[in-house]
Length: 110
Length: 120
Image (cartoon, rainbow over all chains, first blue to last red):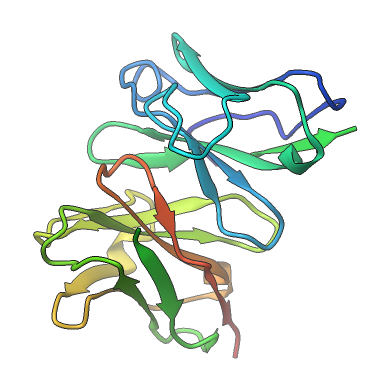
């Protein structure tokens, strides 16, 4: 069982915005700004989309944004496009030299 | 731009040892201050962090039941790092990824992944 909880699914129509949550605890998400988000298309390796809660690596569209409030981090995808349909995983430092992924969220573009 | 490539047997029998290697290109593993990690994904399931090694040789392993069976090491002469997982069972079946980053709490670069099936 993942230490970080994500909804199993999320969906939105093209052009809309969708937010995926990642709920941890005061021992991980709540205490450290080391949350990252990964996009994974079927049969492909994950890709870093957001790091340190809200920073975007070079090349990631600004439609992707991250935030955090308390023990919950969030990934927002604005202006949904068909190619955004994928699985999304959050990842966080969990203290005591431990790292953890969320269970993953399948994003469907309707 | 780092490039990573996993290699190793696609089939391992229980209770043997799973051994995988990740070959790094684009920089020297010994000179670059990168963290080198292994992540796995069982079929139709989510990602699981296995462990990370720093270029100095310091290791960080998942606190799960995997820890007692794990060894991650670096071979700077071959620009590779490796994973050994002993006493495997069918539950260890999945795609194994190697990854790296300049910060140990994220993964900037990923290999394509390699499927390992544990079966007799």
